[in-house]
Image (tube, protein in one colour):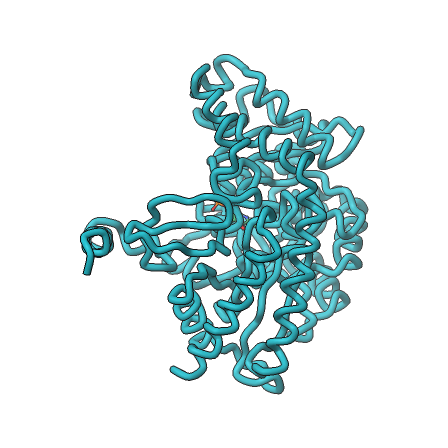
Length: 432
Ligand code: PLP
């Protein structure tokens, strides 16, 4: 064992002893440095990173444009607090995001720090605007780990545990999942039942929906479902919130996931890949709704930190200069083709889900029963790491493997990922 390996093992042991076990780490890897699609651990091992800090690094690790923008901002100032003095990176970012979400419609923004905080603020703004209490969310959805975030989340383990009581006036209803026989019509009928049995629509402030459920298993809402949600919310004066925290910034092949359905949400939550690795989130929305809270009702000490806003403006520059939306679609097509050919060999691959570069495989014990194959997924992820590929799982049953490589990945990177994934699958099945 070399000295680097030894000190890396020491850190893993120290982590076990000193860090609360509730913060789970998917891989026993101590990160030392990273660039583009690659990450090196403290022992000097190189990994192809198809997790990207859980969908945060659509422009890759340490993109030079992001690094330069942050360095330049750091040399000027790192923090003043937007509630004390405003600054250009925040203002410019708000203007750019408004145009990206709803061109020409004057959408406004507020910036926060984490995704959960963006969700909290979106609900707060919707309640402030409508003066109604209710919020409807979807089974299988993930919206964060704060009290309201976990209440809105439609998954028990591990997010809810014994953390209740939860926030009041939140109602869950099924999300379409054709693979598991929940059609758009079924999901809409269930939503109407919420209105008749749980809360009248005129008491509902907001419906919050992920255009593609991320942690819930990379399930895409059919465009007809999103359009029906838009119609229903308009009929009843309900604010439609698109949670784009995982789907945003090109992951699905369009800038935002809702753009596949040709609808305009009232509020959009953004975070993760917005700022290329710096902590930044936001709510972007219709001006009359965004302006409902009185001055002082929104904000936070670190919300819209200058370094993070500078990084986010650089990320948007990269989207413009590097045509990353087209790249997202190309990566998705390459992944689908590679995974489809693997499907012929592996009946445990129940379904491939792909929309742009947002791609995942649901594993089952067999295609007839569709019973979740959670244990095989863990073995595949461990074997992939040994091959040099980092990936993580998702899905309510944790039986889905997600591909979250950067949109800057080359064809060769994607090819390598597919090869490593194929070998990992063979190894995992042999050891099963
Ligand atoms: N909403 C969605 C759709 C997410 O995917 C996540 C994080 O995975 C969140 C909200 C919460 O974001 P954060 O972990 O930054 O609080």
